[in-house]
Length: 113
Length: 115
Image (spheres, each protein chain N blue to C red):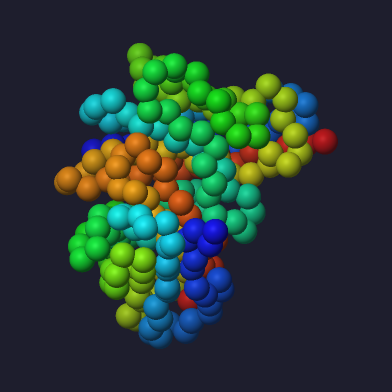
């Protein structure tokens, strides 16, 4: 079982460059999420998609865009990377009901120089 | 809006000692509560969850947690810590925001285990 797969695992960008983080889940989950993890800040929600075809902003959406390509895939795009976006990014998915757990990918460690 | 507070940023225990990690939540209805563990360089893995019923829930790796509604708490415990338990621990609440389900996480507690 692959679960939630994120690519790439590591990335270094120069300020102003763009990139897309990919996420795919094979559990037929309705909801998908992007979080960033910074020391002392825990996990902060960037964007989420409650179901295929919908996306909504989370706590820290500035500087990011997302696309729910289909039920399986949810990508996160940085249009013009900034050093403040240096972080570890996690994609997660769930069935979408508040009683169900979230399943996480292994994370993408992004450094913007 | 829902929120989770983990008051301890770091906890240090000796191997074999007991452990309690604190978690307080804020949510307007009956909460669905979770504890996750993150080993270095890894994603988060579910340890246990509480939906309803028995307020003491058992999880994997010998962990348990107790839900106390009167204190809005869901503390994680383990009777005897192993060196392999050193990790980051996150408490989370599952609730609806604007009609969508959003898992909200605390800031995490880093567990350090001394031999």
